[in-house]
Structure formats: C-alpha cells, structure tokens
Image (cartoon, rainbow, N blue to C red; front, side, top):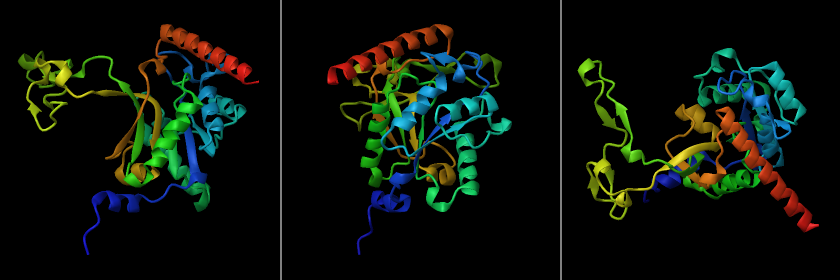
Length: 283
C-alpha cells in the first residue's frame, strides 16, 4: 500500500477541532510601561480590555472568553465585562519580557487541573487588549479560515499586513565581541529569491530592484489562533505551519504612546459612528 502524503498524516495526528471548545484568551498584565495602566484605561467609554472581551463574547465561534492577568483589580474589571477570570497569573510570567508561550502554558495547565476533559480547549484565539479597533467580523473571518483549513495540518494562524518598510534593506549591527567589528552591518535577510522565478536565488537582495523580490508581511498581533498541541508538544505558539490571515494596513492602530492612543480613539469613534449609521439604515 502506498504511503500517505505527509499532509494527510499531520492532519490525522492533529485531529478535528471541537467547535464547542474554541476559547478566546485575553492577556492583560498590569505592568504596562508606555501607557500606565493601559489595559484598564478608558478607551472610548470602556476599559481597553473590554473591547477584546466583547469581541470574544460576540463571536459566533468562540464559546468561552477568558482573561489572563496578574492583577486582582484587572480581574474584577474582566469579570464585570463578562469574561471568565478564574485565576491570577503568577508574577514570574507577568513581567516585561514574559512570553505568550509562558502564559498559554499556565492557562492550559490550569484548565487541565480544574476543568473536566470534555471542556479542555480545542482551539485558542488570542485577542490582545492592544487591538481595540479590531472588529468581531474580522475575528470570525479568521476563525472561519482556520476551520476551513482544519485538515491541512496548520499549527496556528496569525493576522498580517504588508510590511510598511522594506525589510530587505534592514540590518543588525554585528554582535561580534570584536570591538572593531561592532559597526559592521549584517543584513536581516541575507539571501532571497526572484518572486517571478522562485527557483532563482538572489544572493544580495539589498542591491536589486524591489519589484523582483517576494512580498513580506508583518504580524500585526491582532488575531492569533493556536492549537493547544502546538504549545504543549512543540513548545511554542507559532509551530511549523502557520496560516496567514490578511488585513489591510489601515486596519491596524498601535497604542504604545499617548499620541498613538489618541489616534486610535479617533479611529474607533469613526468605526462606532459608522456601525450606528449602518444599524439605523437596516431598521
């Protein structure tokens, strides 16, 4: 008998997604440095994290919405806006450099210890509070795309937009300990290929016309979808096969500085006004 293709073997190993166990997780630690208390700061009339919680609650696919926080104050805000927040995240995985992987491992361990087998998450949807302009329609479209590719062996999905700067012209400074070499530029992407003829290797993409280079996409961190097995078995959040969900550049609004915050609020108010107008037209 002929051996099954690898994609078929992977799909069987990953298994079907239980639609009753698609859970959103909103990470909301308390120690933001750029905008103090950012995750509960008022944003267009609600605490910032409430917009992410609302997307989880309104999604037609998400069945439970959790908040992972290290703050009792934040936990109470999460509960007040309809999320589940049954635990506090340990301080050792809530600092500035703590990773998504660490809080997901903590979440999955808590679920295993406190919830029955039939309620264990089958798919995780990370909704960051820092994406308040994200719509529930986009959340559902991303989940739909992942479910449509359920048998293709994808470990995760990430929302992306076209890169707004040319990554082929970006460099590291040489990390060598040799002081004389510390100012040497090292390309982030040392080689590439011709987008029109993928078999043609380009040895120095920094010195050719950008029109022949492949498109590069930026992970805007608005929607991440992850199989629990990716975290528990591969020890990471992205895995080996990550599905793309394309968003427009103007869908993204950063809120890392006060100026960006103000601009994002203006964008959200425009979105809310448009939604109100659309609702009025339909009645």
